[in-house]
Image (cartoon, rainbow, N blue to C red; front, side, top):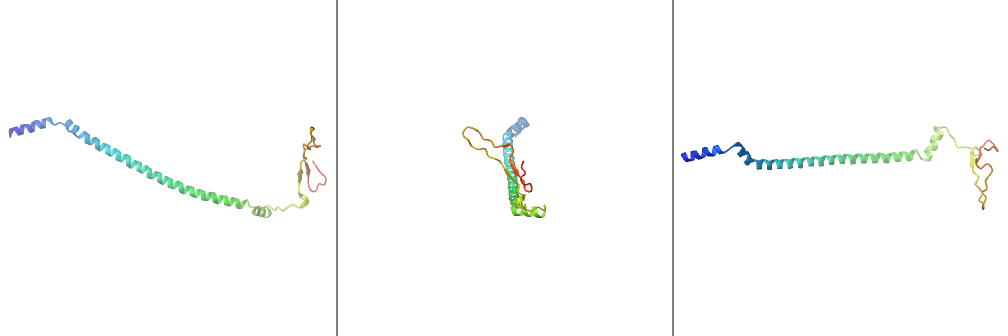
Length: 139
C-alpha cells in the first residue's frame, strides 16, 4: 500500500489550483458564450415586442387623427355652405341683399387693337366707377 499511498501523495502535490482552472477554462468559456448569446437573443426579442407595441399605438393614433381630420373637413364644408353663410349674415350681422340700384359696377376700358399705332382710351389709368345713388358720378 505504500506504493499507492506514495502515488496519491505525489498526485496531490502535482495538482494545483491553476491546473484545475486551466482544465475548467474551456467549459467556463463555452458557458459564458451560451449565456451571452441567450442574453442577446432575449434582449432583441424584448426590443422587437416593444417596437410592435409602439407601432400599434402609433397606428391607433393615426386612425384617431384621420377620423378627426375627416370630421373637421365635414365641419368646414358645413360652415362654408352658402345657405349657412346667408343665414348668419342676415341673423347675426343684420345684413340684407342689396337693392338693384345699390350695386357698384367697375369697368375698365380695353385698348383698341390697331395696326401699328397703340390706341389709348382717355384717362386709361383709372377705370370708370359707377356708384348707385350718385347718378353720373365717376372717378
